Image (cartoon, rainbow, N blue to C red; front, side, top):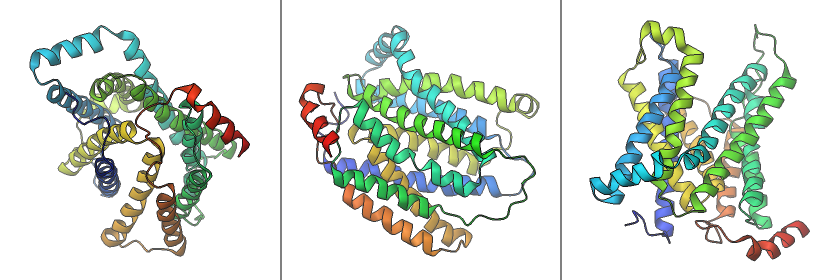
Length: 340
């Protein structure tokens, strides 16, 4: 019993994209709020990331239970597809490991680059995702769609543009290392997303089974992250040190956002995910204006306009992206693409 019919309606796709966008925007604001309140008891962000994975795992098991319909079927599905298929588990630990590398590279890049420069270069993950989609999924994009992808890239850059402040940087910065780190993070982002999409769409395995497989390795990797980053402090102060209702809310939003992201990737594609993320940035900035009294700049307004136009241009996919086409049927399209 599929939770959703395979030929998903446009309404459902729009619903998922909208929810994902709203959740992401709320998450950004709530996260900013929890990281800026000046209290002594700041929570460890690494533990929050780990708990998020655990909640996503629990929610996915819940959804799988709903999908299989009976406890015995749920048990057999978990035993067969998770415990007795280590190969599949390894296959889905790839995105987790790549995302872990990406997060570390982002951190390294931010330590060596100005925040504005980092935000701009990091947006290259949008065209990079589009390239990965073309090469890894044998899919083609029209000229207009390519144009809208780069337009989105430009729009997001303008939206996140912050005038370079004369920061008194205590640490010695190395821009070269920073740019290399951004390049690796961008490649990781594009590859991991499209790889997950490929795994989801190239077999009939339930989305929730795939999620469980991915979050199991995610938990292991984020636990290693906690140990390596805040190991001593966590042992001293406790895993849940500094957790307020707001922090719990942030963790909850991150979990729900993660699940909706996987639905969006399965039924639309990674490029749509990028557009959704851009819309979320705009929403959260507008909300920051209202909540934190942020000033809207000309660059933000023009960037927001570019993003909106590019989303409109990219449009709802002209082809069904919830299935992978066979490579041979795509040869002609590929040759067309190369001649563009």
